[in-house]
Image 1 (spheres, rainbow, N blue to C red):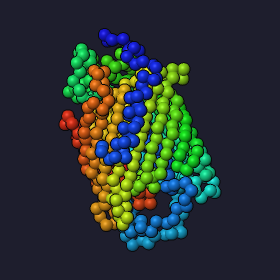
Image 2: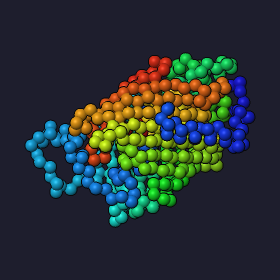
Image 3: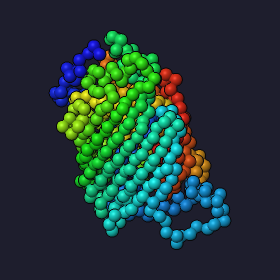
Image 4: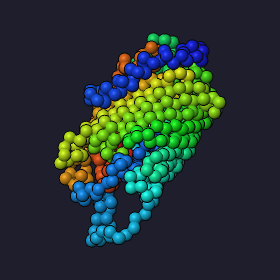
Length: 452
């Protein structure tokens, strides 16, 4: 490829990286506090208390009488099918909830499938969070087939939390090169890799993931955890391009087999959450800092150390209508040493829930260093809260191989959307967003639950 494997380009001495990553972390916190500032089908949301129906350990929930005035999809279906039936308070509800798994965005097309979620509180401690298991199988109009099983288990008293997932998929992944869209000053391979014209490529592959993490609650709202993740891509191929592509340039430079790779590593996380609800928060903070260490001795194609930071802050602007919310989110990730495979690099939509960068397709911008920030205003439209709305604006930045540094160039995105109240008890919304960005990027995004 005309280049070495670039071992020399990425020194392994960690102290050389400390200043830039302290800058990344503190910039994340500063943007969120000051307020200035999709994807192939994605992994199950990797959030400590996702799908939990209680908000906070140590507080016994009281019935929320305000939700009795709200109207959701279950009420609509009941009024259509059984308009005169009265609620049966004695009927025992099943702990397993099947539901359609529908979504749409420019990366995957339209998705249809089936999903089932089961929930149970373990033990007799009234403050224990609900344990949840889920499974889903789906197919999209762009040929993606996706299956997963996941669990999020809390032992009595929330002393331990176990999170894990198993994924098998046939993926179709869009690619627009490395970096943030700057014109490189190097040779032709540098230009192909940076892809400043944002020419679209598409790669097909098989994807398998096995992940398990164990968290220990060390004090109220604060957890520390560790785990392991095996990410495997096989039979990677570009069925349309016959020449050199960004993927082939990167794989050659860093010594990855362009047809198959494994990214296997250990996970270490510190997480804090004070959100009043994990599906749609009105107030509170969520923060997570994690290290991933890929190791060849457990099968990884290359060694690598990756740092990731996630910070979210929510303010309710009205006591009477707490659904008026101003929300901030910053997410960043950087490769501290070694090399990650091309499609494991941090970038657009590479957050754990793959919801960042609305307006752009999955992995539209990416680099060995990446930072993202978003602001969203959420507001009710109908008095019964069945329909509400959002307006959002986001920015993202990444480095590249042509001396573009993190925070040097930013790419904007934004849009607006409607929310349909899917389940008033868990504050679950059906989200319909239209978003746009640079280079003519735009599209309609459909999914369950808020982006963050």
